[in-house]
Image (cartoon, rainbow, N blue to C red):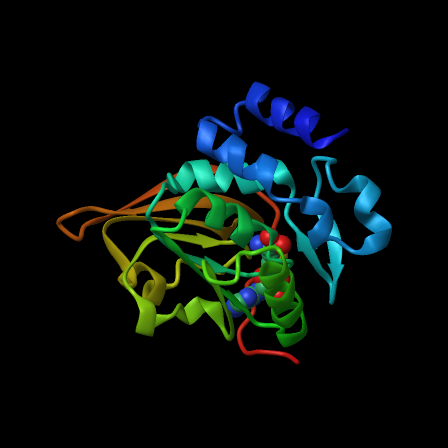
Length: 212
Ligand code: SAM
């Protein structure tokens, strides 16, 4: 499959619903975010290993989470789980120069590689990469319009809910009866929180602490 066939498929299957998401995913070269030997598979709709036991998420999941959160131009977005940096680059395309993407990774080696790639591809001033335990968020840069968590938590981290703006949305996979479910957490303008169950998913676990 090539890039155009992949995006067409994601539109047909309903994962991509907005033009700006399609355009962003067409712009970001996914082959730059996977190991060299896996480049021929960069536009297959599946996760791929990126080293250290971690993965770059499948393109349909990247699209689905961005659509579910409703990420738009000008948003200030926090991503937990930088991994390869691919999702952060797609987010950067969508938020545009008026927005900002903060992304945290607990494995320093992955964070450094992602930062280097993002800079090389021109996303350096729109995406800030941090090494740390993302379950605590980035209180010094809060509040955020949107939070996207790309590793599965045991339960919804309250620190992250606190770092959402009123009217903000978080999309997060959490453990659920031996499996995982993707949740949408909506913080109302009055501060009230609504949790919606979206679909069963399979992510690597959200772990505490950091690793070199
Ligand atoms: N968004 C990534 C991409 O576009 O390549 C894919 C992320 S991968 C499915 C999940 C990542 O979350 C892994 O790199 C893992 O090391 C990281 N992770 C797990 N627990 C974390 C935590 N508490 N804080 C930050 N990152 C974490």
